[in-house]
Each structure stands twice: as structure tokens, then as C-alpha cells.
Amino acid sequence: MGPNIWLWVWVALAVILSIAEIATAGFFLLPFGIGAAVAAVLELCSPGSITAQWIAFIGVSSLLLVGTRRFAGIVTHEPPVKVAGDRLLGKTGIVIESIDPANNKGQVRVEREEWRAEAPGAGMVEVGTAVKVVSVEGTRLVVSVQGPA
Image 1 (cartoon, rainbow, N blue to C red):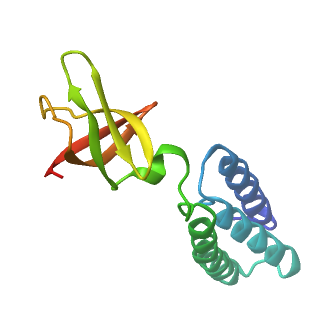
Image 2: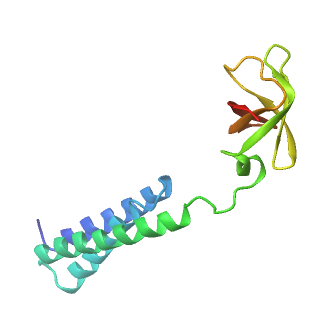
Image 3: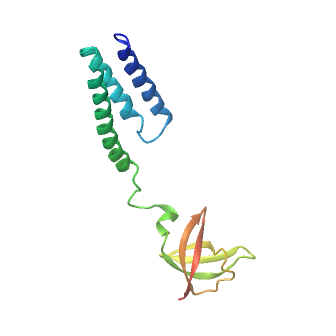
């Protein structure tokens, strides 16, 4: 390629990848955009050393990709303290009002709180039965039967 063409190739690549990062999540394309910008600066400082530019592009992009993966993992981790009904997931409760799928009624007590509940596929669940919270759907707990209390 002709003189200075690589400068424009790297600049175009840097701009395209940086703009494309806006449309994606997870800081995946940004390291490559920065790597292309570094290669463009290298072309500006020492024109014609295409091998050095490719090494800089790959090296900078790789280092930044590893760094942003760690950063994304820290930023997107699950919060340590769950809130609302999610804090009850996996907890055991006791049926205090029979869970009747025909009437869509039933209530359980989990950690001193009383919640409306349903037990899909379990049929009628009697008072005093131990249940485990499987999920939360709106203001109802979805539970699975553990056995008598």
C-alpha cells in the first residue's frame, strides 16, 4: 500500500471499532479500537514499519482485552446482598395455609414473613409441610415440597 495509507486504515479502524463499542455491551470492541489508535500513532511517528504497527495493535489490544474482561467481571458481579423476594431463594419455609392449585390459594411462612405461594405440579400441599423457595413471581413464591415439618 502507498505511503500514509496505513495511517488512514488504522484511524478508520479505530473510529469504526470505538463507535461499534457503543452498540455492544461488555467492553469487547474498545480494546481493539484503542489498539488501532496506537498503531495509527506509530504509523504517524515512524511511517512504513507495518510489522511494528501490527505487533503494537495485537499487543495493546490483547493487554486491554484481558484488563477489560477483569473490569467487566468486577462491575457486573452479582450483588452480595439480595433484596426483596430474591433474598428468600433457596430458603425453607412452612405452609401455613394449604396450597390449592384449583383455587390459586396458599400461603407460606419463610423467615417470619408470610407470602402467597404456589407449588406447580405438587397438587394440594397441606398445612405444616416444609417447602423450599424456588423462585419469585411478582408477589408470589414458587415453592417445591420438601416434606412434613
